[in-house]
Length: 78
Image 1 (cartoon, rainbow, N blue to C red):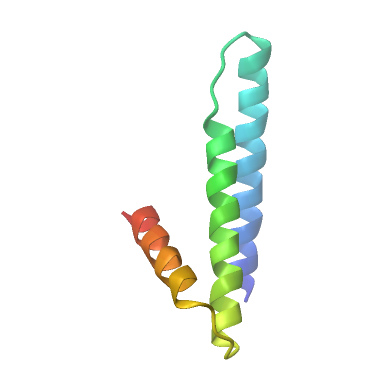
Image 2 (image 1 turned 180 degrees about the horizontal axis):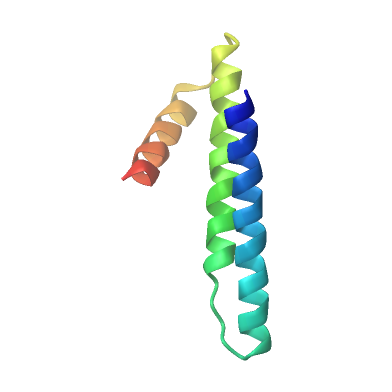
């Protein structure tokens, strides 16, 4: 449990740092959307975690959603 909490705290610190770096770059007229992409991936991973917990509690999702979720998860891991 401590490991998971530490991991989430580090992810938030990394996202904050990327957003800060991106803000400084924008002030200097350099447009780098890297932080936005990282935050989007983080949101998708958290959504996946919620779905995994939902399934582990014994609930079922429609087969079509499960297939989409599996394909997306495989692509992120590669």
